[in-house]
Amino acid sequence: MCTSIVEIAPAEGMAKRGDAWFALSHAVVAYDHARHAPLGDVITLDFINRALDPGARAGVEITLETAKELRAALDRAIAAAEFEEAEMRGKGALPRAA
Image (cartoon, rainbow, N blue to C red; front, side, top):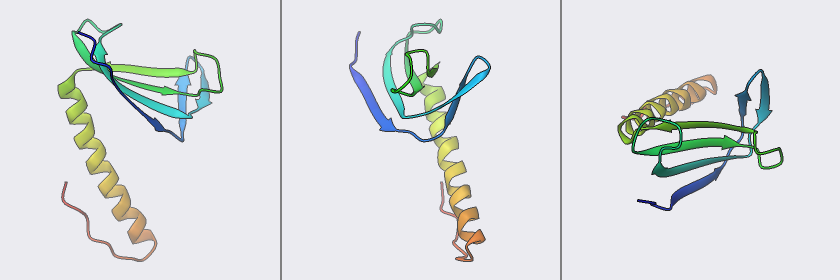
């Protein structure tokens, strides 16, 4: 089944391919058939730079359950980082519940 579920977001950061790092321009999140993982349908994360060749890509295929765990871990890390940033700026923010 092709789902046509694709979300694209601007991305700022770096990704690595081989021994070289490249700047990111976008992140693509999709749900579709696995192309490389020995799994059925997967969440695919692609970190790309549209200004570079098609090989400027860092891709991951993960199960839906792994994606949920990753989302929860990202939420916790973001909340802790926001708290740390507020502390460094002297705002004394309280951590948000995850």
